Every structure is written in structure tokens, then in C-alpha cells.
Image (cartoon, rainbow, N blue to C red; front, side, top):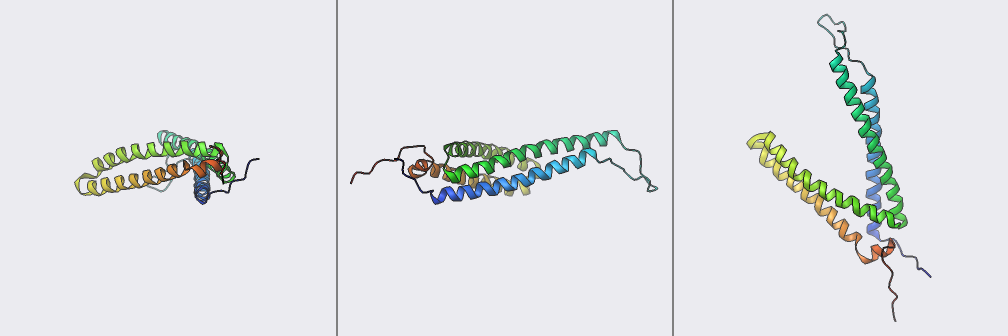
Length: 178
């Protein structure tokens, strides 16, 4: 008979962080979809010198519609990701194996993204800011990336601990011999 394993506190903390990220991502997605709808249908009226609307510039209208469509697409993706995080929250709380696997995959992807963005972001900022701002930008970019990577590695290590893997059904619970 399988014995019920209590949910480790760290899993609860990770689940709470997951639901917070999910809700924020949902609101961001809703905002971007609304902004995209607004930008793609709003005509541009540029007042002329005598405060009467000038004819609409077709190029400007195209740019606004383009950014509106891009915003709506990014918003739709963020909505899907937000819903995914909320589903993952449920799976983490209930100890579902698929939630453990998805969390591991997302953490590894997050580490890779932080490494790449840490390197490219600091190089880009340093080249754009010149000498005075380059040093501060470089240091803050590196420190931010290192902190993010460290947090993800700690969570990854925690999820591979035996008791956590047992909770998610990723390993068999050993029978204790008295």
C-alpha cells in the first residue's frame, strides 16, 4: 500500500512563486492584447499648424497597426504561458510528476536565457552607454544574471532532493527496516 507523503515546505514556496508569476503574466498578457487591439484600430490624427487634423499618413498608420498586431500576439503568448503557470501551480501542490518535469525544464531554459541575456545585455549596454555608464551597467548586468542563475540552481538542487522526488513520485520510497 502506498503511503501518502507530505508536501515539503519548499515545494509549497515554489508553487506560491509559480502562481504569482502566473497571475502577473496573465495580467501582462491581457494588457498587451488590449493595447494591441487599441493600436491596430486607432487612426492617427496629427494636428496641422491651424489645429485641424491633417490627413492620416499611411506609413504611420501601418506602423501603428504592425505594433498593434505584434503586441496582441505577444499578449496571446503571455496569456497561454500564464495559464500554463497556473496549471503548473496546481500540479506542484498535488505532487504530480509532470509538474516536477515541467518545472525542471523551465528552470534549465531560464538558466540558459539568463546566461545569454547576461552576456549579450551587458555587452549591448556597455557599447551604448560609453565609458561612464558602461562600468556600472556591466557590473549590474553581471550581478543580476549571477543572482538569477544562483536562485535557479538552488531550486534545481532542491527539486532533485530525495524527499522532493518521492513527493512527486519520481523515485520509490525505501522501506525502513527497524
